Amino acid sequence: MSTIDPVETRSSRRRAREAFELAFSARPQWIARAPGRVNLMGGHVDYNQGVVLPVAVELDVAVAYKPRQDRLVRILSVNFDQRAEFDISELIPGSVSGWAAYPAGVAWSLAQVGLAVNGLDAAVAGNIPIGGGLSSSAAVEVAFALAFRQASGLDLPELELAKLAQTAENQFVGVNCGIMDQVVSACAESGSALLLDCRSLEFRHVPLPTGLRIVVLCTGVERELRSSEYNKRRRECEEAVTRLAAVDPDIRTLRDVEPEQLASLTRHLPAPLDRRVRHVVGEIERVYLTTAALEHGEIERIGELMYASHRSLRDDYEVSSNELDALIELARQAPGIVGARLTGAGFGGCIVNLVGAALTDEFVASVSQGYEIAFGHRPVAYISDAAAGATIQPVDR
Ligand code: ADP
Ligand code: MG
Image (cartoon, rainbow, N blue to C red; front, top):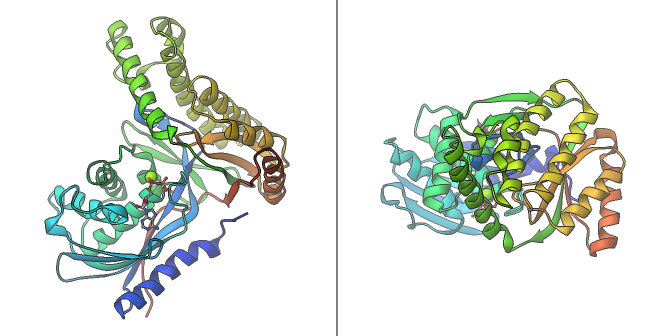
């Protein structure tokens, strides 16, 4: 089991700082860091312009850096054990590939909106599993966005940085991600989830009841299916909107379908579009209900909503897998469990659990044992409190 604790979090900073000193024979001046995230509720609703309820976790990416006098960026990646170099004035989409496309994309998107972006020397290190569904990519983007903002003396709020980070990933890296990951990485508060409206980008912090911890359990199974099925679900939602708009022109996204309209509207949809819409509309409702349950400390209700979300993702949205369903059943039987659901795009990947803080170790041991008997290997577990969003601090001399 790997456990998230503050020691691990500090180690991204330390690893970035030590790598900087070795690579550049100088001290870094600043360290920017940004966390990964897990979504507690609101699966596959971001691209339908709904609401989501992610939390930042205690795993992060740290960038130790020193501003330069020119527009050159030189970066050492600790995780990839590679260096990259680019001139901000010369960036165009496609000109930088691999991991360096993420920081380059951030510099490019800041420059695209007319900002004067300064170069830097940097070392980047992270402990978020890469490609593991906890959004290491948004953490890299947001940490570099903070670094470029400071190095360039820019006056941009965190939410704007998050939007520019998303633009970087969409247009420079070429990944069609939503806005959730960047906003929660940039704006989260310790101890709270973040209720985010993916249409207006309004958000507010929702404190988690004390005594609960977040446990992420990963199947370790990565399915080729994921991106093709993800794109298929997006197309199905678009097609459902086109058909529903013919009935009710006020419907521009599935966000516009009210729960009361569901039964009458889904009659106009062929299978499986009716099921897809039922998931999205129900899931948005569950985000609001979960927010209220968290705020009122209604622990049992939170659990019911999480299991209902999982059933909906499994049966109506059809993005679960045998491994994910098995994890959910094992979690349901394990000590300390409040609730569990698959999180992220599905088809392998992870489940998120809320667990009584005193029982997290027993919980993980119990689920791991059962999973190993069924699948021959243990799930990877991350235990975390709701963490703070991105921060930047000077390196003490
Ligand atoms: P995730 O679900 O973790 O966000 P992605 O495929 O979206 O997975 O992003 C992973 C990519 O982000 C990596 O391939 C790499 O290019 C970049 N990345 C993530 N973490 C780091 C890191 N610590 N250092 C450099 N690049 C990173
Ligand atoms: Mg990502």
